[in-house]
Structure formats: C-alpha cells, structure tokens
Image 1 (cartoon, rainbow, N blue to C red):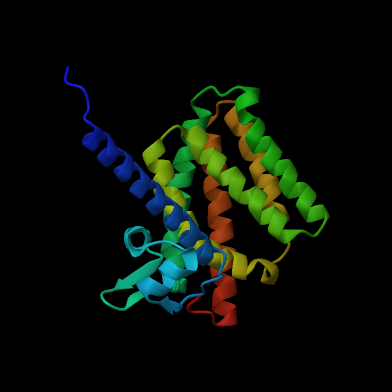
Image 2 (tube, rainbow, N blue to C red):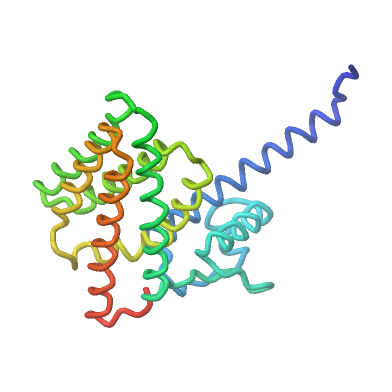
Length: 235
C-alpha cells in the first residue's frame, strides 16, 4: 500500500480545518438567529458577517448556504444575507410536521424496551421544567423543555427523523421564545411529559404516540390562537 505523501496529508488537514471553520460559523450564526440577536429582516453583507465572526469569507459563505437550506436566511447574491421571518402560516405547517413526526419518535422509543437509566434524561428534564416553573423561570423552563424534546428524538433511534424534526424545532424556536411570557404558565407540558415517560417505560407504543400527539396539538393550537389574537402575522 502506497504511503500518503506530505502534500496529500497537508490537503487532508486543510480540508478538515475548512470543514471545522464552516461548522463553527454555522453554529455561531444559527445561535445569533435563534436567540433573536439577529431579528427577522436583519441584513448584512458577507464581509460584515465575516468581520463579526473574525473569520474569512469562505467558511462564512458556506455556513450561510447551510442556513439557507435550514430555512433561516435568504442568501442574496452580491448583497449578503437576510434573516427570514416566520409567519403564522409557517407556524401552522411547522406544528403539523412536529405533531406527526415527534409522535412517531415517541412510538419508536416506546418500542425499544428502554431501561430506567436510558429514561433518566427525560425524567431529569421534566423535573427541571417543574422546578423552573416553581421559580417563575420561564427561560429555564424553555431550556429544559428543549432538552426533553431533543432526548426524545434521540431515544426514538431514527437519526434521519431526528435531523428533520430538529430543523423545524429550530425554525419555531424564535416565535416560541418571543411569545413565552405572553402565554399562560405552561403547567400542562410538564404533566404531559411525565405521562409520556411512563408510557415509554411501559412499552405502550400507541399510548406514547397518542399522548405526544395530543401534547403537540394542544401547544400548537394555543400558540396559533395567541398569534392571531395579537395580530402577529410575521415574527
């Protein structure tokens, strides 16, 4: 077997470094958007984005293309990027997707015979949600809730499904955070999560699916009603 030449090794290292820089740029830009540091409608040139991150334009350009595929920005040739708003119609479709696919993940998790140790993360996230509500810490509640949903998708065992659902959760995140303090205290979510964990522990696939479907349908209905009542057509 021929040995790898120094030039080939250098190329491999450069390619690996470029991928790492693109991933870093993607993560940083994604957080700026999801945390509403860059609100809907925000625009910046490619050079301005690169300067803010302290990076060259190449990984930033590739990261912006990934964010466009994620549905978070629009890349404008020779003009940079614009953060896309999320409309009420978008949120309706996103919740329809989440209701269907996350319910499937719950059903898959219930069919895998998971141990108490494997379910500990879901129970811990639910307990953290309950504690955060007792402290009126809505941001802490939201973080624990996000952790619950991500771990549920992981326990479903279908990585493609997880990837798709997390993308739509990201797209809904900004609206959920902006309206968090406008909604009633989310006590129902904690109870519904606890019931779901017990259904998964019991291996009851149908019950797990139905509990989570009802959970997502209720949450979506409440959020869409709030957006309509406040006249918030784009966020």
